[in-house]
Length: 415
Image 1 (cartoon, rainbow, N blue to C red):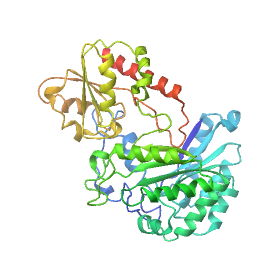
Image 2 (tube, rainbow, N blue to C red):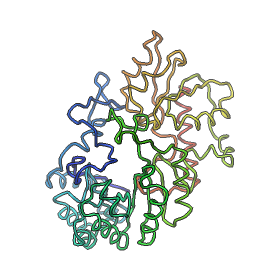
Image 3 (cartoon, rainbow, N blue to C red):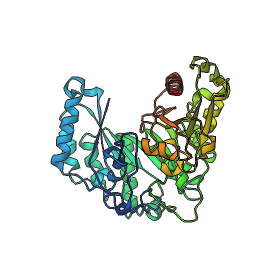
Image 4 (cartoon, helix red, strand yellow):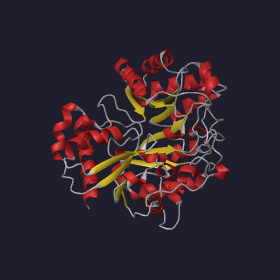
């Protein structure tokens, strides 16, 4: 079991400055409109849940007393004393967790109980000398997530504005050698891909990293820049999802640590949508029968997989798959719905369970041609639920998850 706790922190301000490729670099936090989500009040767009997307990276570090109070509440909820080592507590924030001024006090408090302690995101920029990394290790931290980008000091200096990049890399090496380190790297075409990423991986493997998550650099709205109105880096094209998958697969073939990609790609199990693989199609016999008409709105990347499954199970052609110009379904917004051709929609419309849209407003948008349409949220996700660096699902677990999710989708369609 995991307990997730936050210390706050402002992007760019509390993490040692914006990296050149930071998602939040061009965000005007003073002029952001409410987003909308499944938890919003029926008559109001925006709620505590969806505003967390903004607040998480725009609120300063919280006081130690407030954090400890919240920590106590969460630990009481799960009865830590009886579970102990079965629990992993994650300390994360909207900025670099190593910059939190009371981190040592937090670690000391948490390690009074025999549970695993995982420090969330750090870029390594707060590591100004080896003493900082040594202190984290000696205090009893079990795991840390480290945004590497590159193990080349000059690359980190230029792209991450890491003024003490040599010390950051020394800290990275120390963490790898002494505790579990889950690395990540935003991959930018022509910058740190190809030979550069391989050189970084050679270092990570030699030092003993546990895993590496490769994150494709997103530079355009359809790739998920829902808070930005302009590219992060002007004039820079990005990897296509196909190119990115090939890179993730190559890294996985060459190195011994676990490798994962985001947008989601698990090269070991070839997920997402493992049930679409030819050797797994017999599992589709376990899906329920589609009995009603509906239009299913989904993302650009998911649409081909859904169509592939429906070609087999939707024998009466009752379902239409409508893809919008957004690669990730959870990041579909009202703006994406405005682009949907209403003439193509049936009277029941299934929208992604986690889409950032207000239910009543989405109904208004999709019924503005005078035809009332019933809007229903589908399952939260239809494939492998990406869970940080803990991507240990085996093939059978992934297949079961997808079958359950698609049966839940079919139930939404039929009722």
